Figure 1 (cartoon, rainbow, N blue to C red):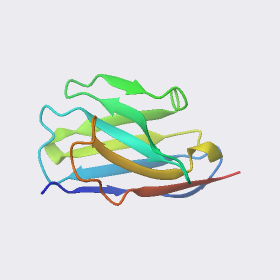
Figure 2 (cartoon, helix red, strand yellow):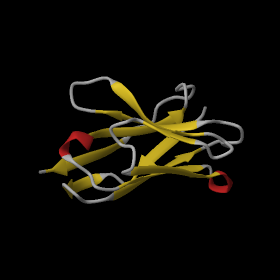
Figure 3 (cartoon, rainbow, N blue to C red):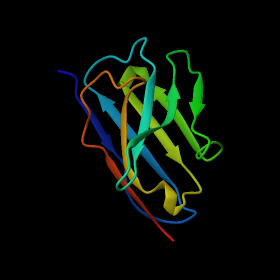
Figure 4 (cartoon, rainbow, N blue to C red):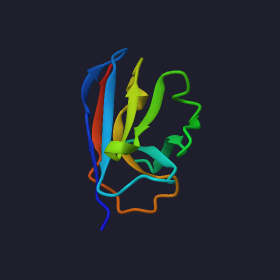
Length: 113
């Protein structure tokens, strides 16, 4: 069974930065990977994707502030988050682009104003 383990979350002031990591128990070869965010009381939304070839796409709300990257040798996906604001608060999950694998526990990100 595939396992995804997210880390790097925390409490940060508005304007601050965090870097999330997600380690998969399987190879990421050929998979388009993604980060998702679930704000309190809301559904889980797609934040960013990165294809195996490195093409990136972002939700409009994070464009220019977040950067997704991957290290396939380490089966790890990263999300660098800069200029954080309170609307970025939520639990962040990684998965394939269409959520094909079991969800991990996520990483809690809390941005204070």
